[in-house]
Length: 542
Image 1 (cartoon, rainbow, N blue to C red):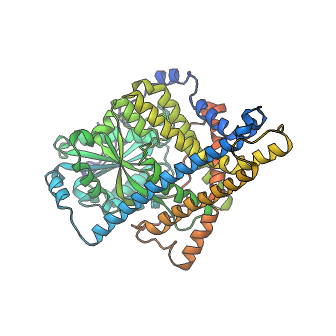
Image 2 (image 1 turned 60 degrees about the vertical axis):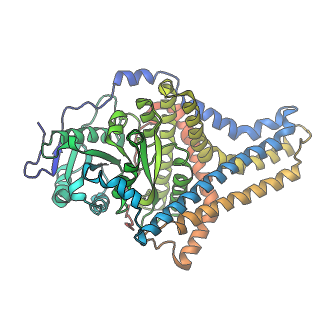
Image 3 (image 1 turned 30 degrees about the vertical axis):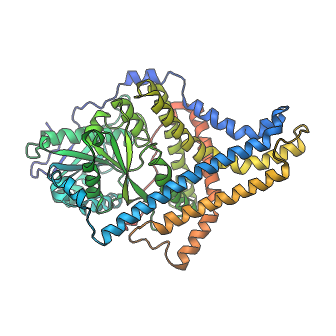
């Protein structure tokens, strides 16, 4: 029944093609795509914000409040940064507290009591996909999984390759030869091309690999699938896990009630690093780590990169959507819609590492960085459209409104409109008022006060960015981190702090362009053009 099964060892198996339900209804997807693309609403609101300083000074009477309204809006953006900073500080303290307890070998007796009776019945399944990434990158990820507690007896690994993966058979054999004895089960699948309704990329490959892998485990008589509870971890092939990831995940999982276990997604704090990085790649990684701690987890928006959940929730949520490129951004809201219950993101207070973008030379670095930003942005626009189309299936109107608001504030304002508005609008308003707009009085805020307040906001923004820099570079316990140590590391970190705002502005303009591209080209741009890993050399560090 299984193609390319390896009967010599029950720990590994591989398949080329096995009939399996991919969960895709091509006709239904085509019908949904005939509706208005709701990402246009996303773009419209952003566009109103960006153009606000241009049109408001020309409207009689309303223009008197221009200075006041702009200061009010920038002030709201500053408030968002303040809330995110407070959340990030709290998470940093929690991570360091756990790290300190680990270092001093202080055991949580209550947690031990809770998990003692469940450890023997819980097993872990980790799935990742591989297309053209170098084998050295994948091996770094697998090596970090080998270090997990009881990996050979309780951890199974599923690796989803594409049928178009170059040298797939030799790669499969290399993986099996080196790792089959180190995990409970090692499964390699080959995702067929051109399945109706799917788009190429991790989303469809992961969906196929998970369905195939679980089918293999259930049919494996020696595995005794039904006797165990399973926790699933979705990750990229360039992830480096903390050695305690699975044990910490299991501990937090076992503390919850049965209902909460299957309504939760666990997210570790991810550091993006490699041996050497241009400043804009490094700064983007620092900001992403900050937003994990300050926004994505506490605001319950979406998991990213690699995350964990029960297999029961994975199956109830129909695995991963094979027609939406950002399977992580869509995960929480899709599982909420399909299960019709609220799904919560819960933090794991430990550090994982993912590889950032990489290029062959400096220009290629810029290109890969921009492509990654574009991919995240288009993926966010896709997810917003999916949410609006499916919102009638949400558990409650309140949950729909609150999640949509948080999602838009983060992806539409924080990552796109806020930086452009905060930096450009004060300059534009002053120029328009001087040379183009009709003469009008100023309500509450004079031009001189307006300039002063805007400079104060610029200072507070850099103060927030300084806190971000200190938290991520010097306060998180990342073993083996040498780039930020010593005088050279401090100077480099402070120089990158100065460059943070220009980098955020560049990021925001790429986002704005991407939203326009999605608006004009529609579904044609919704493809998983993954960032290149060919020049990626991961820093293991854990």
